[in-house]
Length: 273
Image (cartoon, rainbow, N blue to C red):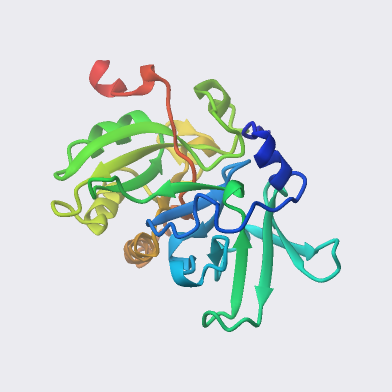
């Protein structure tokens, strides 16, 4: 099951017809906020901001020295000289990849149109951070995570799928690829990301396969979605502690993508009922 974002004419010309936007006019030229860049058409995560070229060497378009593994395809460009790059999920045009320019240690530059990208921030304007966890029904996770010191807000929703703007009914079919999840906004001065990950592992069973408790299905799997390399490293480090036991944790660790808040009736559900 797939459903993509509607594109403007300008976006469609680039993503679906492989056009190129004018140099130095894209939204993400010189943009240096931490987070994840995803495909404008399908939400698939493509690049971490840590891989983005600094402002002084972006060469006219947002440029990245490496991709999120498996997220980008390469093929010969019709001009016979360049290599085109595409979103691996929807095959939308991103731009071109160049090698041998000696700009960075990887010696690789993914030159991407801003209009091919959507940005998922790792933090708010006030400096609070985001964290996203999935572990069974989101009602229980939301209720328990709200109790953690330093957590400012918790929102139930859907993440990681192949369908834009999913509904609860669609996610419950298990065919959209989404997980029921919660997105936290927290104050890093009051609670660390490591403390949040440890608490997450304490309030659900990371060893259960196929779901949580009586909630069985692909939408109920255990997962952590990271926004920065630091979050990724921390999540793997804490998970590694659990591998020392007899059972192995089933929790998967993925780059964050667009988080869709669930319908109003699913927010604060445990407290309401």
